[in-house]
Image 1 (cartoon, rainbow, N blue to C red):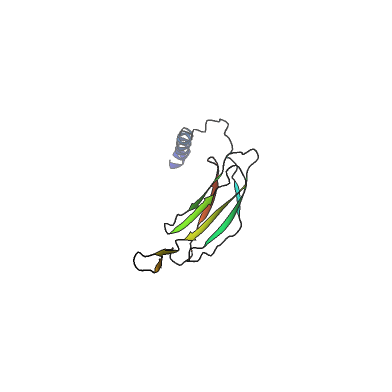
Image 2 (tube, rainbow, N blue to C red):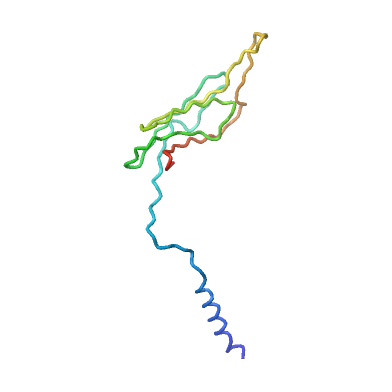
Length: 135
């Protein structure tokens, strides 16, 4: 008797699955994702000393064909004790990022200098190029 009900149970399960709502694809035409902006750095690492001198990384970008939007460079994460000067490429194809520690600061009335700088260590920073619609 159980053999007689197995096909019916399977048929009911399959029919239930077939009436579940779809994901709503809509079948419309979708635009491809915009091509990314390529970037190349002149150095993959940089040593900055705590005396206030700076180090610079040059950034070359490669734009997708037809992209004439202004490109901005950003550096993350930001370090409050490090000076970062970003020269974005704008409508060009090259920019730069300069890094420096705080350097010496005179202490009032003491005639000596202290150093306000980023603590020694290795910091992983990311330089990102974006034109507002692609990175």
